[in-house]
Length: 585
Image 1: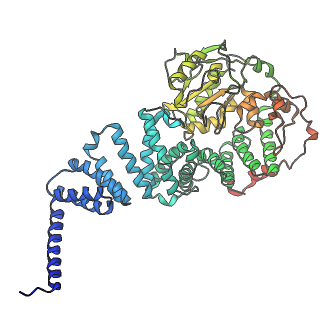
Image 2 (image 1 turned 90 degrees about the vertical axis):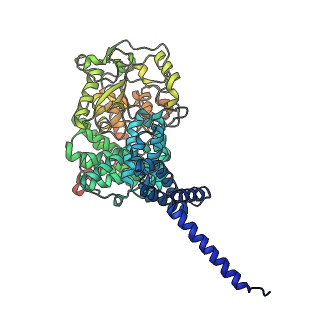
Image 3 (image 1 turned 90 degrees about the horizontal axis):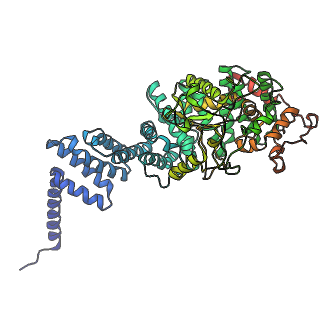
């Protein structure tokens, strides 16, 4: 018998293989069970690109059989995850969106729903659909409540903290997707659609601004929001200016001083147009800009700005505004520093506590609680019925409520040492409660402020209003970014405002070191002595009031005015007032 030649065996094998392959693919392409089995095998085998195609085929075949999208929803999430692994982000987002829009999703637990929403948002970020991604994280922010204001969350297993952690974990994706100077080209649609995206990016960007590892994500989001608002609303609109107070410090921490300078200049010009060239509220932006100039080594320009601000204050408040109340305020602890460096005794308790509700201050809690009391801290030189802490807090809240349209209330006022001790033992690890003895609440002079039912955030319009106006009512921000006043990596608290009296608050704005309120209060007699002799330390030189020997008592050796080198006092002031169109010089 003759053997068949080898080519015949090869042809027969190929024919059989082709027939098998045709039959196999016909089966898996027409039989949903076989297609799903193939999908699972490829997915588990590490071939997501191939698996995703079979997953889509399963969905199509099931639909042909009459299976509803509600029933298919769980399988769609598996295919969406596979598409994500295959780097087909647009397909992944579409499938997640279909599944989450079904009635099936309504039956998910809160955690399950949040995880799927987060996966959808991540797919959108990578696909450069930033607007729809931040809309999800903005919802998470609202659900996270006070947890969004914490930077330390170890040991907190609440749902609020879970939402905050999901947002925080997306920071690397925003960093990779957005330049720190913004990507407005990623945003399309009509006016309201773009403004809604800018609003959401401002909120999420402010969240990342609280975290050192989130600075680039924050800069990308906030600068994109800024570009949108400039395009639609204009550089002078209050909503555009608002972003400068959040983005400017972020740029400074990143070392982008020129970008911060431009922001503060634009904000100054906008507020100058809105409030007038002689408004003391401009002092916030002048001081921020002077601080940037000092960091850049431009001491002459910084000093000129400082002199410009002091002339505004002299015109607005008078030349002798710091001469009175010095001894009284120190004796009654109204301007006493309180921190881990300056703790209070356990026995300390103020003697002039009053109910906040009696002064028409809106409250977040029951009016009869201890935390809803505050110091009277009345001014004897004026009518003590009108010149006191609760009246001024009520006035500040009323002003900012009218400006912002937000709901503002007192979250916490006085806390006794024992109250603070018990509170810290219960929730101190969450990062928003100070250890006992280190809390300004024990003085009865501190006020934690709620906005819309949760702690004030940088992205709130109320925050801008407080930053601009609180000093006029005797309040300062106690715990600015990067402080070391409390235990923890960063105890920034944008909601915590402390009453020090109008004269002291004015002096801090006019001559105090930027973002060093506790150091300022500790060295207050030195600053008051300088104010009375008009002998403030020139910009660019070492602040003699912060030198160690000067921190404990009033300075009697401040240099006389004629011994201070006089810079060109008007150079930076001219720069502010004469830049064409309110823009950069």
